[in-house]
Length: 108
Image 1 (tube, helix red, strand yellow):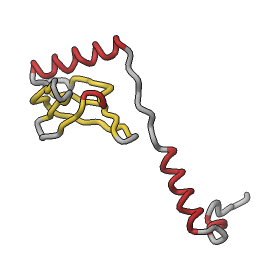
Image 2 (cartoon, helix red, strand yellow):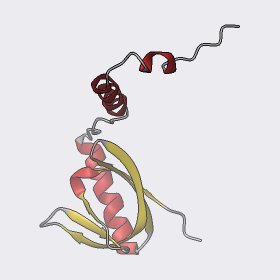
Image 3 (cartoon, one colour):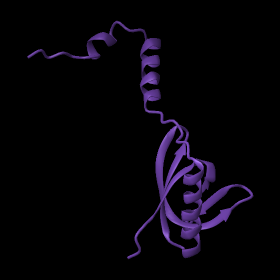
Image 4 (cartoon, one colour):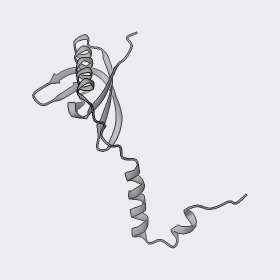
């Protein structure tokens, strides 16, 4: 069985600039392209947000921000249509254009 040291053996021969560029390149591989929603998906998203806001139910939002995807959970306290932003109970403001998924949590 061959036991190779991988990148460790090559780092001594690399310039610091090369190492920096390789690390940046690896970080860029983790970037996620913004999901595009069609008209039907946007309509469904809008209906789910309205339902959650009117019933004061907890939601789990899938949010794309700065080339990353994360999940935000909470109760929607305000929908500001002039700024195209929704506000959660903990004070977070999430723009509408960065939301691409909504799911209502089950009430216990």
